[in-house]
Image (tube, rainbow, N blue to C red; front, side):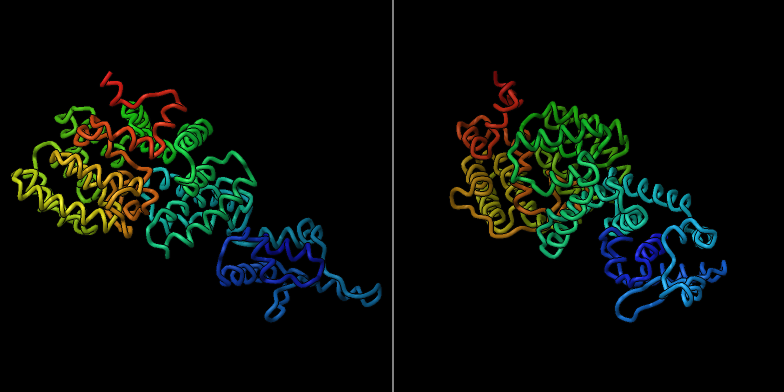
Length: 472
């Protein structure tokens, strides 16, 4: 229908293929087949209802609409002219042609649009989407309604997820699509929550902590059921040491999505952080029973065992299902660390310290593991050496490249594992876990937080991190 009306608007002039793509698909990148199919369907409909106009192909250029009846009359009254938009859309022949296009009726298209959007949004909210499949759904929805801020916003957010990848072949095209889609959505609706969330993701650590916090709260105020935005503030508040507030946000997310393996796994982590290890064990055991093949609950189970004096249980978890460590290259580091956590000799600790330094210099994400492992072993100076090097670029530990790894910060699924170092540097949840309590008690910890901008954030919000409240 849109192709027909664009051709009618041209009043017999040639409409290029590029113009049709822009006006009928809203600038979304689609293949030539999409336009070819639309024109073929239009021609079949016109023929089926006995229409007196036709779509003429202009080779290597585009199409134009010509009307046979009008052209014959023009021999008396002047040069040939094509049917007007009103004649096509409002006349009997135009109405018959529009109604005759199977599957292109207004009601059918609206229903299809709503089905596509509902399905895509549900998958995006739950974080269980196959990105390529959801992207196809959103592109189809946009082809039906190019004026939908909701569709453009969802596409922008979906694309923004790919921009945090350490792989430039993924990140660069994702950035272009996210920027384009977000601009479209915000031009249509400046308050579209998913477009605003996409902008939050794109700007990332270029925003200070207080601004990031404010943006997320604004999005949630607009859309209180926006699960991805709530998930981001769960991470941000934990990364800032506001453990109890992060717990409350996480419980709000679970109320919206009771069977989310992501938020249920985070519940277990937060129980461990709060000092309730027995309850954390119960929660993560149940999550693993529900999602036995997902790497994120497996990683949480492994981490809690390793950091609560049960290294042999952690070894058993890794031996039973090493995929969540082998895929990222973490397994050799943790094998060395678990030996030291089990048998704390000078030799095993020295080997682990060297392994942590080497890993942190090679892969930024491994700095997270190194800080927790060394803190758990009482190697405070070494833990600060890695933390200052990775977070503030001070000292001898300099990260050379990024890598794919299961993330403590973002670890919802394999999709979230390929994170760049900029993302890791604002996801400092590990600094506020039990093994790092020795760092928080050290006078060097507050300068570390000041260097990261956390002290300014606490002052701007008028809050104190939980570890300082307990201390006082």
